[in-house]
Length: 205
Ligand code: TMP
Image 1 (cartoon, rainbow, N blue to C red):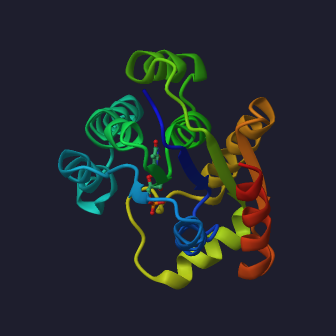
Image 2: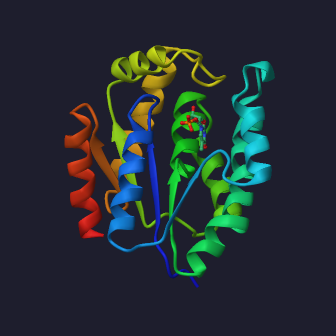
Image 3: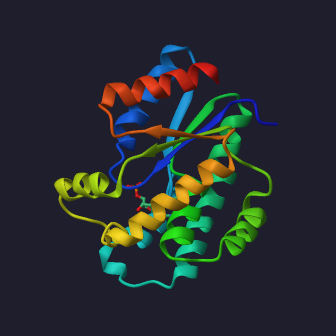
């Protein structure tokens, strides 16, 4: 039985996820909520090993189906061994990315058939889904500029503008498809302004 709430934060590269995730964590703790912060791909010992394989530049080219299945393999560990047990004890879980990223990156970016991703999602997650997803949206141009300024890029960050444009469009399409769960946030504004938008949404939750 799930007692805590499961919140995910997603978006294109350079949307300012890390800053806002820290804000959300502090905000929830201030309200007396026990929340754990985790991430995908990763979040467990095996998941972090899979993350290294997925993001390391030394991995080189990988078949898109392999990439998708590795994302879901890491996710299975994450759900079974971390997320569900934490929610069951009544604490909240805040995840830096989740399944929407597979639809956006492997679906939109890599061009994999959405139906096949849905089959895999159904197989691994059944009807398990976040209570709320905060989708931070910035233009690909701004996002890529922020990534460039950070220095080295991982295997997926090496992709080009068109790839990230497809990723962004796929995220926006998901937000339209699931307006109740996915809250689209304009993250072009200042950090404080973005945090204010998030705070209003969290108060509703
Ligand atoms: P990040 O944690 O720094 O955002 O890096 C994670 C990368 O993995 C990012 O490029 C998005 C990508 N990713 C996918 O392609 N599919 C997925 O399902 C997930 C969770 C992440």
